Amino acid sequence: MNLTQILFWFLSALALFSAIMVVISKNPVHSVLWLIVVFFTISGHYILLNAQFLAIVNLIVYAGAIMVLFLFVIMLMNLNAETEPQKNKWLKMAGVIGGGALLLVLVAALKDADTRNQIAQTGVGDIGLIHNLGLVLFKEYVIPFEISSVLFLSAMVGAVVIGKKE
Amino acid sequence: MHALLLSVDWPLIIEKAVLISIIIGVSLLIAMYETYAERKVAAYIQDRRGPNRAGPFGILQPLADGLKLFSKEEIVPNHSNKFLFILGPGLAMLTAMMTSAVVPWGGHIHIFGRDISLQIADVNIGILYIFGVVSMGVYGLMIGGWASNNKFSLLAAIRGASQIISYELAMGLSLIALLMMTGSLSLHTIVEQQQNGVYYVWYQPLGFLIFLVCAFAECNRTPFDLSEAESELNFGYHQEYSSMKLGFYLFAEYVNMFISSAVMATVFWGGYDVPFVNDAAFGLNHGVNLLAFLQVVSLFVKIALFIFVFMWVRWTVPRFRYDQLMKLGWKTLIPLALLNMLITGFVILLKQNHWHF
Image 1 (tube, each protein chain N blue to C red):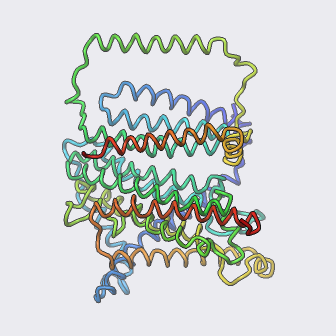
Image 2 (spheres, rainbow over the protein chains, first blue to last red; image 1 turned 90 degrees about the vertical axis):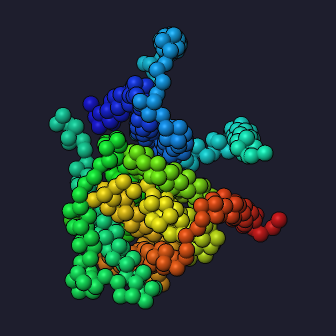
């Protein structure tokens, strides 16, 4: 076991633990905070893969912006453990079946995956560095990239139109 | 296990640990004396004397203030979440300190036969790291405000968080124009590019101005201290806090001020470059250690000037109303930053084309 492996197992265990805590926390605010921990651990994995740009963008966009909006909404709706309505029994059952089906699909998809020859290269490889990522995005994938930016713009305009009072 | 311990580069770890402790210690010391400087500057601007009882010229005043905060009664509201209530100020302080990791505090020194760089981590995403940490700063404020279980605290926390998020955008856009010129995100490289004495502020005056205004907003300083306006908003998100937990929130603001001054000095004003001196030649003639010392002094002089500007503005300009603040952020600074970005891109392209259209 070298240092990278120890870090990998630590981050993985923490990620799984926090992901479970997201689901089983009674208080929605705690769930959001655990989700932020999950994002941090995933960023840690990115750093182990030498993808520093992805790691920091994951933190800025997800942990820094989207989760803040989640927190805004949950805090303003004042969802506390006491006021949380008890869910319908059938709804819970449906959730369990849905989650189980997803698990089945994931297991089926990953069952035949080639795990022998596709080993993650930790600490080497430079595809995740900002320089290479920029070259790929603006040379090979420039049209999808620009189209997705138009998509973002239209979403933003839509949000402003919805938020505007008549 | 033995092989694992041997595989670690221990001298490097010790070197970094010493460097981190020194930088954190210095940041805290400077933040302490910022509170003193703030009161003195306020006093002189308002034609008073300021604190002058504790020690000569009142220089022991920060110690007295700290002692007072430590010895106050610790109050945790009944219906609040205790863990998050304590986590809030801790997070505020942590995020304030974490930014200092990528700031280059000087060149390198030669000591015990080793070349030691005066920067904790020269990562190639330096500026993005700063943005990441700044965007985490919202959590200290929001968690604290929510865990207080008080409507006023919650409203002030949300107000402060939306202010920080709004100004982060303009801050990022103002830096994009600069990054187009530097071609690198590493703060060390950016400082090295300014070693010829031509600082980036001369190329990017508008970008610097936008960055400065956003830094004020990010640090929750007047004229943007809407989340902690004492008189009209019941002291804001830390209304329920007392003792050193309140002290942490107030202190984090001063640490933030120090660090953001350091970032501004690094990115726009040449960082540790000694003005009017050819650093490389000086290092050859007088040794790198003396050069590193002068560089650190030069950086701290720049930082001190910025901190003074922070205080000067606080005691001169009145506070914005909340709608004015949002209007300034979204309708003035962001379009200006976009314009600055376009002009910079245009000039860079023109230069690549040897000034032909």
